[in-house]
Length: 421
Image 1 (cartoon, rainbow, N blue to C red):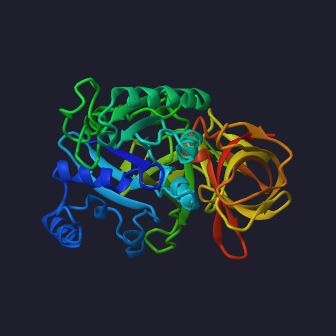
Image 2: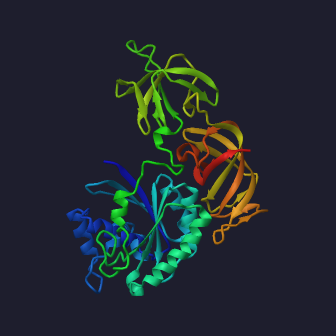
Image 3: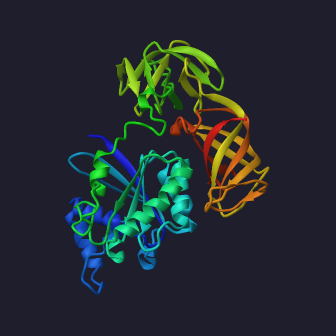
């Protein structure tokens, strides 16, 4: 059974937590003790109904404010598919949380309040989903019950968002009118909107194709990449000459006998054996965790990247990247940070802010000297050591990186590496 990881995003009070609660409740994915707990917590409601948002708004501060602050994860499954739900914060102050939550998702649900239409946070979250290369977008037009289930309202929002999607070059967009509060078109088809002939949200989640990445290429057709996490040298009497390189295959496929290159050194060898739980395999594919054995002894350490020699990644010390700034302290051109790509770390400096993206218009603003919290921009980095990566649009796993403040060890920026300069 395959797994779909998806994120829900939208403005404050668009109904994200209620939507997830409804999805879990109507698909019968709530345990009895969980249901009893939210029933007790909902006793203060005047109408006596169950507050389904409490399934995800677990923090006390979130319940008091009625907003989602942290990223919440929920797991459920149907007979057709397993799911991981990532509930992202709606408030602009917590946009950075969405970036971290969405980085591994295959689908994004962008909620739109039918009364308000497309707003700034809709644009912001859609831009982030686009930059992160999430292949599938669902525009969930919620609270249709508050606009009389009007087809005209639904159509107007679809037209407005379609213009937005065109600017973002988003192709796989699905529009679903719904009322999460009443359960319309979430799991069960609505009788209040007979004019809508598309799938319910759960129908779409169960059937959407997830084998392909954003570039349309299956994962196992991607160039083979293996970031080394640990070098295994037992040096015991029984395993005196044992040398294995442990890690997780982040893309592609490795086979016994493949010619490989170790980056950034450029040393070459062949795969002598592939080991999983003390068993030897002829091949291994993403996302397996394995131990690789090479035919020759090479100086390899944590952070090195093992790749098949016929498809090498970009290796450079000067790179362009799209950046989402995640710190309250401003970023200024010339600032120095620690850059982490996979398991590899090196110091770097922000040589230039090429342009900042205007969230409202998606226009490029040049001449910017600093970035504030949640700003998005294209930057040029200069690294102390060469880094090896694939452009993010081609490979999300090896093209993603983070900036770390060395003084506080806090992650201050999320990066999508685009290419060398």
